[in-house]
View (cartoon, one colour):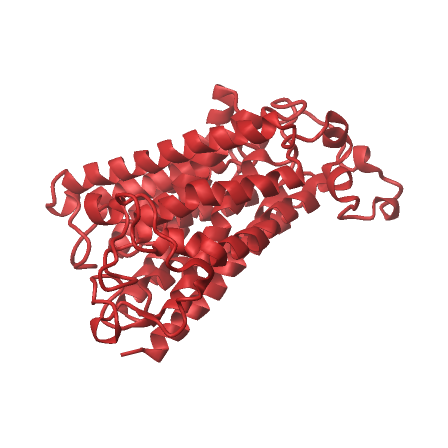
Length: 455
């Protein structure tokens, strides 16, 4: 029967995940220059509008409808959500058969639909940080619309659509059902997916003017910490909400999310202290996000001690990974690759080491719990499949929009201010700041090694 408590928890979790997108906007917005902050806020905010409409029209159906092409994408049975009213998911006696995930109680299909919508919204928003300071707003908007159709909806079907969940004989995606990879809340579908796309777009749009000598100093570090805090808060909906019930598994995911994130902050700050002699506020915020990313796929399958290990490893590796863009020469403005791609890979793969059925009987035992290398290999295959598909398809979409002349702003607008060039407005009244103009708000100075590590 329908469980009102579980339904309420899923709806509350959906609202928490929705808050993550404005939180991400502040997190990214604080890291860009003062003349680019509105553009960054808008690049995130527009995802709420574009994806929200597409999800209702056909996105949910392509993601969670009965499989249409051998585990690759769903059909259009739920297009427009006209066939979704009054339907339940997850319980045999109320329609669909019972499945190991999420458990024995039913949920209204529309509650589940709205919860998953928020995942679909934040995933393309994450990509925006890789191309900060140089993308046309309408080119970005077109990219979001095409990308979620071609990349996110199919990948969500692969990872999140379980056989029998949305219908009696419904067939889901190949990663969830044939490969049987474990991903509790989106390490592959969200973070590896967005990180690989961010790398591809950074290559398509090229480097910012003056990079790497001028990396663009963060104009408002308090914004960054505020955004990270909102993300951490909303992430409880992301992870604990993915239990799809107010139950013990939600408590496990909540606990693991907390301790992994805390451990990642310590790991990141330790790297900064050892390399540069100073821990930074920016590093603490970035470490928190790295930990949140890494624990996302694992939070429902590992113990709290395993979560601490995953958090520390993610904090250290992501802190080290952000310097790769300088060595390899790609301008990932806000380190989407170093945090989301690397963090997503860390969390997804480490499930193969730290997963234990004592936490979740529907999961598997990893290598450290006597499960051998099997699950580890499965996790690697899932991670690489999503990475490769997202990277290749994003390259194609990005180059097509760039070829049409609709992706990169003019040099004049990039230098003088993308906010005024793209939106005809400014975040700050510079005339009221002692006469300081855009060019003198942040006097030029040599970029230090510590500043190169900003994420």
